[in-house]
Length: 108
Figure 1 (cartoon, helix red, strand yellow):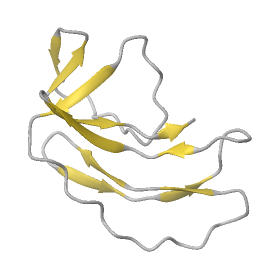
Figure 2 (figure 1 turned 90 degrees about the vertical axis):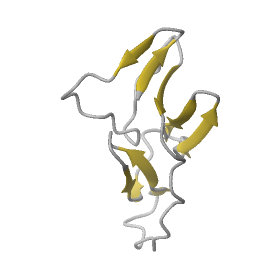
Figure 3 (figure 1 turned 180 degrees about the horizontal axis):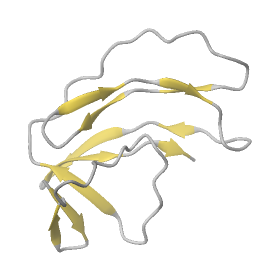
């Protein structure tokens, strides 16, 4: 797996934990993509949403995360938006000629 920033490719540093894309990530001036040179991610796991904890909470969908060795299901959860009129954009896997990469979800 390689981290691509512009054109140089960087190896993922050993021992560094894999980022958890469901957490807010800072926006980079240059698009950053982590390519996973493996088969496409499995289909999402079908889960039952628990009851909304209170008014104003939004469902954040689960997704398949790459942990460096395999895909791992990150379950969905209820979350309160950080500000008025914010909406959650779910994480999605995309593919191009270099392989698969995860476009992390976050509040917009």
